Amino acid sequence: MAASADASTGDDNHTVELIVLDDSEPAANGGSLASSSEEITPLLTQIERPKINIFSVSRSRRKPRELVIQVPETEISPVSLFLSWAWNGSRYSGLVCMAFSSLIYFVMEVLSDNFTAQSIPLFETAFVRCTVTLILSYLWLRRIGQPIFGATHPRKLLVLRALVGYLSLLSFIYCIQRIPFSLAILLSFTTPIMASIMARIILHEKLKIAEIGGLACSLSGMLFIFQQMLTTQGGLHKTVEASHSSFGGSKHIYAALIGCISSITGGISYCLIKAAAKASDQPVATVLAFGILASPAAGICTFAFEEFVLPSLYSLSLLLALGILSFLAEVFLARGLQLEKISKATNVLFVEAALSQLWGIGTSSIAPSLGRLVGCLLILISVSFTMFFGPEKEME
Image 1 (cartoon, rainbow, N blue to C red):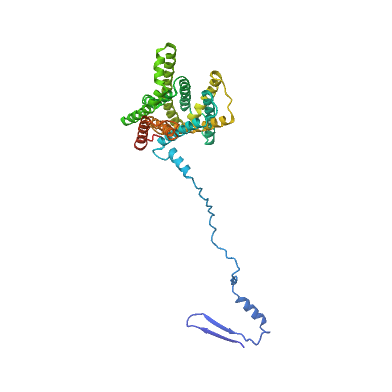
Image 2 (cartoon, helix red, strand yellow):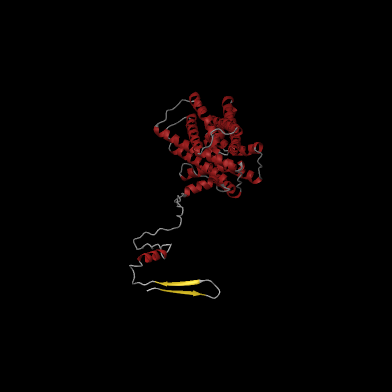
């Protein structure tokens, strides 16, 4: 069956032609059907959608985000936090470091009194401590990447600090061997007074009335503490009696004068420690400079002026432990002087004498007395006033 139709519209020349093919004639029109089917085939073929089931893996078309590796935070112990705060965490850091130094010196005194097994000469003891200090300070600076020898200006200050510091140590050893022990200790505790005076002259630090009062209060406490010890041991009486004789009096007077020189040079050494630590920005450098000079010098004095004593294993272990504690005390001392005014920092050092007396009274090794208790109370009041009412952090 086939039909055709023609149509035209008005004036327009458009013509529509309709052609109908009969389905009963497949054979005759096979070629035309094939051609028409090819003509009506769409140009764009439809893409079959993939079948998705529960076992198919879905992949996001978005770009993968960058992997963020979360490192677990390490827990910091309270001791580390406290030491970090004490080293440089507050305006009290300088005074706290000085308190740590005094506390370590007190622990050293307790260990020396209670665990001494062999009599070791003073120069030999100084040699071991200075050698341990030298090694530990060198390792400290190497670990933190600090140059051993810095600029020229700090180097000169470090050399002066080492010279003056060893002169103070040498004169103190000479003094303590020739005058009563209590008198030598009392002379050594005048070092904070000398340091404050030298800081006014060398570093041009201003001394306030409160600071002078604090030092005077602490020194008065020392006099109360050692008054009975001097009279009991006959230190002052023996010195006065020996002054009437020509030879013995001259020896005691010279020893006392050398003790005063030790105090003065110790005060100058504190000023140089402060100046060198601020110039080099590393307080351990001052400890290393002292160890470089003091260790060989003390070794020479050990063999030149004293008989060398071979320490036992127990005594050597005690010497090494005291050397490590001495290093820590020197580091905290240098840090405290670097951060705080010398007149305030050195006043905290008197707390060592108060702790020593209270420990002796508590362990019944020292007889309690009103003078000792009053002296300890004066020192604690003075140090507490300095700690809580007068910190001045001067770190640049």
